[in-house]
Image (cartoon, rainbow, N blue to C red; front, side, top):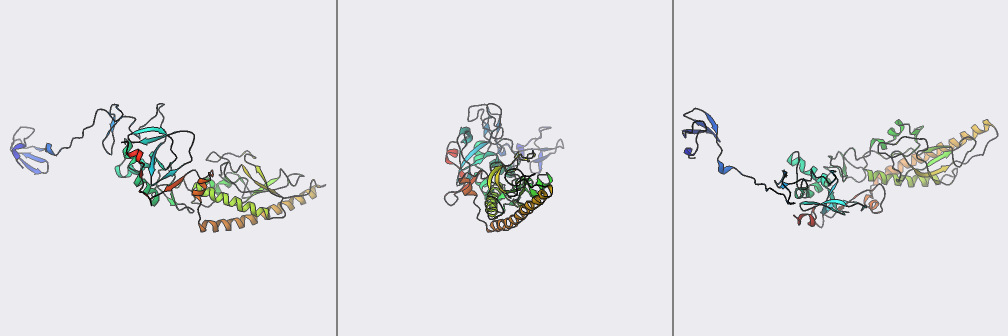
Length: 392
């Protein structure tokens, strides 16, 4: 390298020698200094205005594009200053949701517009979570870069690296025992859906559920068996005994609902097989004892089938009342114990046998199947939809 082109910044002498890359020693002033060849510098030019014609406020950390507030997906706010969910249409792989009444915000090219999206699509926050691990913490990212994360996000969902829930970006902790998809700890069977949580909250009687634990009001639920109250031993009133069954751990929300629905059908059919019980009637029971709500904001079961143990009306003496009470109580206990035992065995066999019906449940608009996944990788590779990429 021609040393004469390098001069000492202290004295201006060109009597210098290179001691290591980009570092020189001046023989005259005896100082060490750094010198970087200007031809090796790369200058990034940022335009004064973004694609919207607005002044540039920041740059995308991935591609360096100049952006205003409306370009930056991470900093985007609507006219009222609120942040809303942003969708990215996709092909080959993506989520499906039943269309709602409201329009959604959708990434089209460099813009975020209002449109109706039913799927397949991805939530922008989920795509951004796939960009973060390889690029560090992101503060500014443009629409095209978010859309480019569709293939890697689809792969992370398929391999179980990230939680499958559409709005969740947490790493997957385990696979659902039924559908085998990966979910984080919070999206698998929550603790408040288990038998132990319901007992701790005082919502169980003699270890039997007063209400089916954690099931929202529009979900199916298990029947109850009711017996005498005071001098009235059948019909409305009395004490109810619930079936002692709860979904196993490590099930996603959709598979919990699917198993609850199947358990409700089986247990209802089992109860109908007891000649000691009156025919079941559909009743509303939630809030009956003024119970508190679960962590999800719902009470337990609100509508279920009730089977009553018939008995004598108004026995003449207290001794006969207690005798009749004990008789009906024994029948209720026996029926509940038998149904519980049979139900636990049959539901275990169903779970082991597989046959997950999440997709069908979504098509039938079951309340527990809030989304489905469209997988067309055999036809086309997962990527952002053409209307997203062509509008750049």
